[in-house]
Amino acid sequence: MNAFNSEIRNFADSRETSYEIAAALIELFPETAEQVWDAPTDDQSAQVISRAWELADAEEDALNWGAERIVRA
Image 1 (tube, helix red, strand yellow):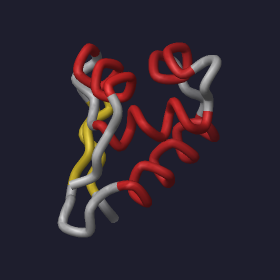
Image 2 (cartoon, one colour; image 1 turned 30 degrees about the vertical axis):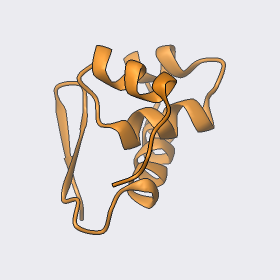
Image 3 (spheres, helix red, strand yellow; image 1 turned 45 degrees about the vertical axis):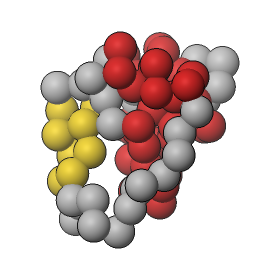
């Protein structure tokens, strides 16, 4: 399990989102993370999901981006 700081945990918990997704959003889009979370372009979504899987533990098989469940390919 990765250790995520309180900013990431708060962002994720308030949006019912996996910590890995929140961490990727904040890392990749620090000034616009909330807007990207709410309405990502296809490119932004692909970037976030790719980075989130890099951050995820190997045994993690699904991540949540709000109501969307993203399954490891």
